[in-house]
Amino acid sequence: MAEQKLRLGKARKRAKLATRQARKLLKKHGHTIDPAHSAEITSALEAVDAAVTARDVVAIYDGLKTLDARVGAHLGHLRKSPTREYIESIGLAVGVALLLRAFVIEAFTIPSGSMIPTLAVGDFLFVNKLSYGVRLPFTDKLLVEWSSPERGDVIVFVYPCDPKLDYIKRVVGLPGDVVDVDLRRGFVRVNDKLIEEQDLGLLANPADYSGDEPGHDGAHAAGGFGTCDPHRYFVQLGDQPFATLHCGAVEPGVVHDPDATPADWSNIPDYRRCDYAYTPPPRFPWKVPEGHVFVMGDNRENSADSRFWGFVPMGAIKGKAMFTWLSWDSAASFSRPWEKIRWGRLFRGVHRDVER
Image: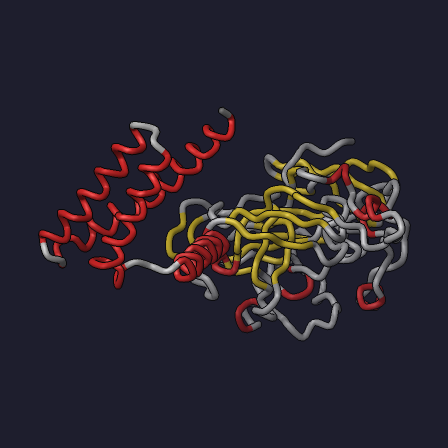
């Protein structure tokens, strides 16, 4: 009894597939063949349907044989081969994936420690490319714009000095903002207001972020940063709470001249300086030009960002970071492969509340 049900089930599945394909061909191309031939195919379809209703396995297979012969004789030149259908299915899937990647969502990997402690080296995250609008791929042109970045947003953008590279940083200044940064200590003023930061102490378990203790790279140190034991700081920028990492000070002694005229880098082509060699510009406030944002890495001691090379055009922004879907610790031993994954960082939102 079980074997009979199995045979009937297989026969009905084959009949469903064959009749669906035949009807699709007949609907699309039936007008191109002789009406008598079209009637023969219709008759064969009805015979298969009747056999399925009667649950007659033998009649189903006989009807399928007749249907296949008539479709092959009259519409065979229009019927796709299994290979062609397979290729078309793969092509459709690839096309959909490319469209999604171009306009909707894209994966991004964190290659450096510039966003510690928010993001770790080896984090894999998704970027929402529809956060601010629709960008024409491979260009700086926005097709449609329905919102703008806000202070505190973590964004992925095309690096203005090398279009082949994508960077990820946090938006600190918006168009028209005056941003003043203490290059040695990391504290920031926006529109002459100090962004308050609460010292959370030394970064605990630095290996959880990079596989090694986050130190200074020589280029940054040569640019005027001294060595220090970086502290975590709680920051509230706009509506977004997050943590930064920098040398800091007991008292936020920002070297600030309230009478200084904000510079907009207008004497530098495209508001960027690509030959910076990690050397900060002369000490002055930055005024963010229209159509641009000022960005910084959360690891302010080790981040090449707007402090060095300038502003990010709105059209270069690819999207807003969403969440980490995988975190890979390259320093962990392959002898214990389960330790290569930082399980506690999986599916963590980038714009989440920060533990103090």
